Image 1 (tube, rainbow, N blue to C red):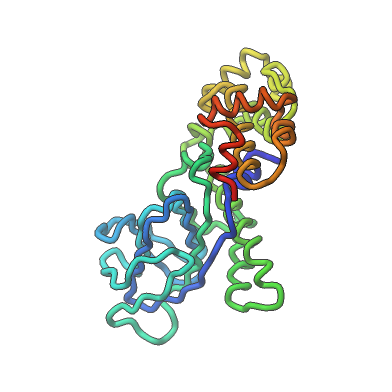
Image 2: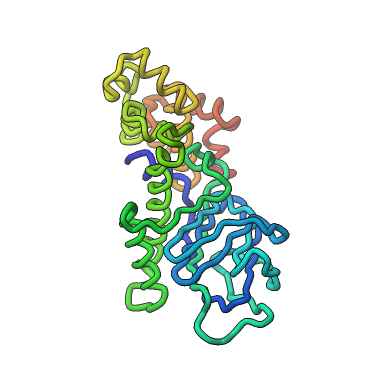
Length: 311
């Protein structure tokens, strides 16, 4: 897998959930903190303001087609204006109900929103997600991100007009939507930073470093060395190591070991594979060597980790 696909696949848990909510002005909906979750809101019709807390009047204005991601599930408020008071109890995004605000009309809704919740494994954070801001706003731009706009339209259509197969289609569309949002955010990094993105945005937009990352994620069990990764990147060994460390935040083989252990933890928690198979899938020919590396990484042996965290 490529880096983004691999990270989302490994860190996502359970099935994403969603709600389609129609609001009549005036309205304000507070969303409770949801640790270990990412909350996504899409404005399908009308406008709204997203505020970071119920008492805050500062926020982000969002219009039709805009997408807002709250990657760490922090407390936030959606409202028709920056001054409308919250009148409904906090809820999770996928359980959102149109709040009964004083003076709310019964005609056409002032706003139609799609809200989603994704569960993320809090024990296996990746900088690709942890480096995101607390609030990520993608203004509608069908010419720049047509795939994101298409996913929004398909998902909204399924939720507004459920048909045969909708229950099977919606979770897949929700997963697709999350990937498109993250892709758009990282693709736009050079624009936001005037051509010089930092952190993982810089790593993913740097061809040699991205080539090394994709190689490791495509085949984490391969016997990678810094020299082999440098060949994938088209750089000398020393130049690649310096460049990778500066942008990704750790040396190439340090990142590889960390990602292998992250994959191993996922396999231990979600499968009944024997330790020899888990070890082989993350690049260890010896179960003993794998167990030693895993215990050094997380502080407990693989077998105990499975008993504690297994599903």
